[in-house]
Length: 261
Image (cartoon, rainbow, N blue to C red; front, side, top):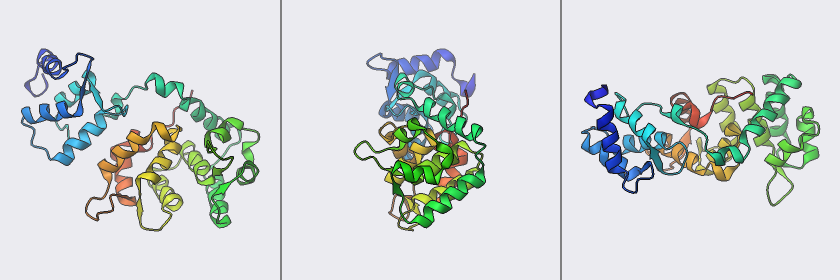
C-alpha cells in the first residue's frame, strides 16, 4: 500500500475527521491530518495542496480527494485537478453550452489564431474596450446573430460588453499555447502596466477560460492568487512568469482543456 497506509487506515482516518458524517472534511481538519502524518511542508505548501483538492470551491474535501492526498508521494506538489467532477450547479449554469457555442463558431467559420489576433489588434487600437453589440459584430463579423454568446458577455445592468472578454474566449477556443495565452492575458487585462494581474483581473480571465459566470469562479480565482501570487513584492498579484508556470502546473485551474461534444 502507498506509504504504508491501507485502504482501511485511510477510510478510518477520514471517518474520524468527518465529524458531522456528511462525507466531507473541512480544510482545517485536513491541515491537522497532514501534521499528524508527519508531513514536513510549509503553511504555503499546505494551502496550495488544499486549494487543489478543493476544486469545487466549496471549502470541503471529499474522501476521494483525501485518499489521493494520502497516497501521493508528494502531496504538496501534485496536481489533483483530475479529481474535479462538475457539480449539478456547474452544469445548471450552462458553461458547457457556452463552451460548445464557441467551439461551433470556431469550426463553422474556420476561425484561426490570425483572426483572433487581428480582432485583438483592432480592439486595442480602438482605445475603448466597452462596446455595444453592433460594435462587437464589427470586431468579430463571424458572430452573426449569436445572441447566446452575447448574452453571456453582457453586463447584467447595462447592455454593454467588454470586447477583451470576447477575444479571450476565442483565445480559449482556438489552439494557442499556454505561453501565448498568458501573454495575451497580460496584454488585455494588465490595465495599469504594473506587470501583475489582480484578483479582479483573474476573475475576469477565468470567466473566459472556464466559460462560466464570474460569480461561480470567485473561489477558483482566490485559490489561483494564493497558489501563484507574488508575496515578495507585497502586491499579492500574479506576474506573467508566475501565471505561465501555473498554467503548466495547474492546467485545469487556469486554462482547462477545451471539451467538445
